[in-house]
Structure formats: C-alpha cells, structure tokens
Length: 451
Image (cartoon, rainbow, N blue to C red; front, side, top):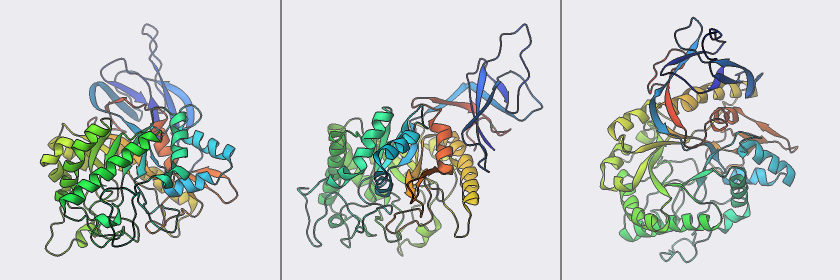
C-alpha cells in the first residue's frame, strides 16, 4: 500500500502512526491533523482520502513515519509527464468537452492532480503519430540549412501547442523541460534522424545551438515558455529501435553546451540547461553497442560537470531504465552546487500481463523508485513519459510497444487512468513547486537520502 501523508510538524522530530495515533493528553494543545491519501495495488482505493490522523512526538508500537523539519534538502520544481506527439494525437481526437475534462484531470490543481511540469520533445521521438519522423528544419537528403531559413514549429501548432496552452491556463505554475531526440539530419553523420553522430564541426555545433535557441524563442512566442533544456535525449543510446536518436559523446555534448550557453543566456535567461538526460547507470546495451576502441563513458555526467561547459549547466537529468536512484545522491555529493532533475520513466507491461498485473507492478515500482526514491535522492522533479496513449499503448513510430501512460483513451472515447496517474498524482496534487523536502523515514528506513 502506498500512502501519501501531509501535515505540518511542530517539533524537530515527530512520529506519525499511519494506522492511527494516540490522542493528545488533555493538558497539551491538539496535535496538527495529517491528511491520509491512499492508492492500493489492487485499485480498490485510488487517491482516496481516509480519515485524518495526528502528529505526536515520541516512539510508537505502530508502523510509523518520522519527519524532521530541522533537516532540509532540495527545493521541488514540479511533477508530470510528456505531451508527446502521440499524446497530443489521442487527446486531440476527443470531442472538445471530453478533451477539456481529460486535461482538467491532469492539470487542474483542484479538480485533478495538478501536474506542474511537462517534458516536451524537440521534434520527433518514438511516440510520434505521423508516419515520418521530423525536426523543425528538415531539408532533402544531401542539402543543408546553416542559416536555419526553413525553421518552423508549424507541426506543433496543429495539436501540441494548443494542449500546452490549455494546460498552462489550468495550472499557471506549469514548467516546461524541452529535449531533442535528434538534431536535423543534415547536422549528422549518415544524414538520418535514426542513429548517427553529430558532425564534429564547429559550424555544426554553432548551427545546432542556434536551432535550439530558435525553438525556445518560438515556443515562448507561442505562449509556452521553456524553463529547462537538455541537448540530447539518452546520448549513449547508440542503437535506438527505429526512432530518432544520436550517439553524442560527453566531449561533443560539452561542445554543444559551450556553443549554446552564451546564446541562450542572452536570448532566454529563464531557460536553464541540463546535462546528460540518461539513466542512473549506463545501460548494458549502451556499453555493448559502443564502437570498438571507444570509451563507453560510464562516468558521463561526472565528465560534464568536471568540464569547462559546467558553468552553463544548472545540473543533471536522469532516467530510470538502468541503475537505481542512489546514483543521484552520489553525483550530488561530488557536485553539491548543481541540481538534479528526474526527467523520464515509463510504466510498462509484459506480453502476457493482465491489466491488474500492469497496474500493481507499475504502481509499486514507481512509488518506491520515483515517488520516494528519486525525490529522496535529490531530484527536484519527477517526470514520467507519455501523458496519454490509446488502448494499444500507441500510436508510436518505432521504440517502445509496451509503454503505458497516465491516461488511456479508448476506442469508444472513454478515458481511464493508469498507475502512473496515481504515482505522479501523489506528488503533484500535494507538493507545490517551491516546496522544500525535509527529512523523513519510510517505515523505519533512515531519515536521510536513502530510498
């Protein structure tokens, strides 16, 4: 059972009995009430509010959570998921009233879970509804556009940006993280959005930096300002499964950041750059696919933060598909002046899993590793992958065929919630941007940074 507990502490260390608490003695002021919200793996309770309990000092024979407001850690930025091209397609296909109801369930702090951060692909990802992948400056093979004269975000104006503008109207605190899966093909070896490297050419680094700045400026002009920007999704994923990706070494990412930093600081001071944007640990497939003679760079985020490019980085972004959240604390110890953001994890299912098995497995793993694990290991955000998909976990163009979403839009027009809606909701509905994490335990685990 996962329980989200809220309340204000009145002493340095207090113990909360989740199953109930002894009443305060008559001669003491009543202890502050603590709201208890529950989602159970069997789905019988879904963000359900149980009767409140009360803080009290001292030990207890009951299962307890101890909080210490005297120990403070990171300030939170937000929680949410991505309005991918696929998410936008399934949401936009709903009748207007139903679409707005779905957006309220996601973004409205009162009627819904109050999502406060989204991560937006800069161009195409595997969750693209169209038959062809795209960027914002595509030209015929063999041509180039260093002047970026063909740059346009017209594609996103069709479905993605209208949804984001409505999301911002429902929750004005909404922040945006933007991430490219690939630069335009003409900037890459192989002239393809699939696989390949960024050309090691100063003119290309400059063009890519200007391309990213133009994206930030165009989104701001469209009513969706960008708060954070990474330069490459999963830069060590050298063999993505038929979807855009780029093998970007740490040295190349440093060159991109050094070209981008001064331009972005002038064009959009609010937009901060995050490095890495990949897993807690280097995935075994990424090590296996490292070209002969090349370094797999298992210390990639450390190389970035140890480099001259670090002065332009607000911190590091992480994903969940290899390793565990303790990697975030290790990096924080090495670079305590830099922030950590958690930017992607998807629920998923096996080929024979029932809906109940998928819900239970996703809920318990995400609650342990993201809702609690990522935040207790210094993450300022927790973001899942798709915010909405259809009942076949799509549409997608290459990539993941078993990824789930916060919302599922069914063929009959119905909309249902998945486990990720609740693991994110237990954060976003209650923890507002700017909140500061304090020390706590999880059923007896240490009060520091362990998961």
